[in-house]
Image (cartoon, rainbow, N blue to C red):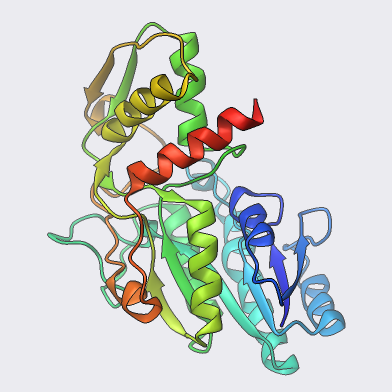
Length: 285
């Protein structure tokens, strides 16, 4: 199996390259290797390399900035995806596309299922929904949320830095979802691809959390791991007390049961994966 991975410098891209099955040949493409706003270059690369599988882990993910750069976000999150799908249909390859909980508006009374109606409330969410449409019915689309990994740019590492720098933190407590450890997501993507899955699936770690819950757990686990010298107060606040340019869904928990049923493996709880990530972070120094 010959695989191309876009977004190879990101935390998910790195995890995909590191966790590929032993008998698969994987090449990671970073931004410098392939400009996703250059449609001709995207399609030429696919026609040249003729991968069996292309895992698109690249995305425009600056949620707030997308409110003023929606055209650029759309080019990367949707137009490029359509170009990938078209070229792969011509070369016989398959597309695995990573999407997001932000395609939902957060009004559901239960965890979102893959077939639930989308209603994005931000420019980022709109462009990712457009990307799902551009990927087409033959693609494997996996929605995920709150992704993090050791060494990446993410909520966990931001919290660790702020906990060292500040005497108190205020964290939103009324946005509910579940964190996702990137290496676990990488394994799920490869597992679904190996099963020949297509259509839309969900994956996040087991359990439920608010951003406040996540921050409290980060401090507790980091103290145990010796990554922090002292605890600080963490104060729960409402979304209205932390205004941002882009609206966020208040509830974006994903129902991953169809993914688990197909793979025969239940995801680990987010706190267990957080503990593993912090040990890796400690090893990185």
